Image 1 (cartoon, rainbow, N blue to C red):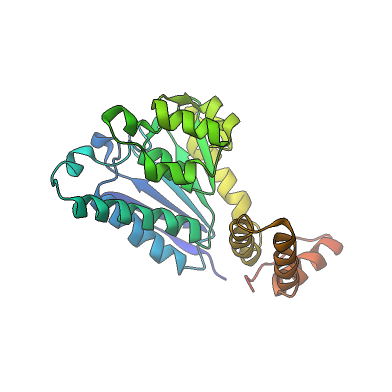
Image 2 (cartoon, rainbow, N blue to C red):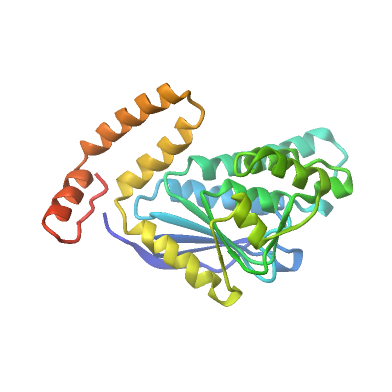
Length: 267
């Protein structure tokens, strides 16, 4: 499997950059704190759909331009129409994009600077991993404007303990990066000037592993969560046997025994 040539698309509401095996999607509405307008959601969906079919991409990073990661939905856009169907379509569009992250073969890392609020916090929770700047802050603040953050509650309640998630949802209060890490919303906290480099280091660590095993492992991890313990063990045994029957597993074990670096083929 050949590496993706370094390319970038430096225009529009979402910037797409390919560097080796890493694809970076940067929300590009800094003047609106990268709010998730219908246009941004559509651009993210299109980029993710393209990446899903691209085996040269092994890891995806989602970042925000300017002073914020993402301030959630665009409230001004949401007030354009009073029609329920308009809002239902918007939230369904957002849900599809979040599910695409969940189902994407490649791991997705949120690179969080500044604030991540409401659907922006949802986006962090929807990603497989998250690296945050030390001064990053997180909230599901819809309740402050009379709107319970129902859709952000879905991934949030799957990232942290229920009472902690409910506290955020009912109060709309911010938590800092240290608290977000302690509660399980983010994996790592770094200085602001190290954020991009630290996220890339994590992405490269993952990209260096067998792409087949990463794809299989991500899918298996989420599927087994909904199973009973006996079901999960049976499913995991079947997945490991399938993984063991791959060229990458045989190559990896042989390389370990022979004390050399493995040559992954993704097969």
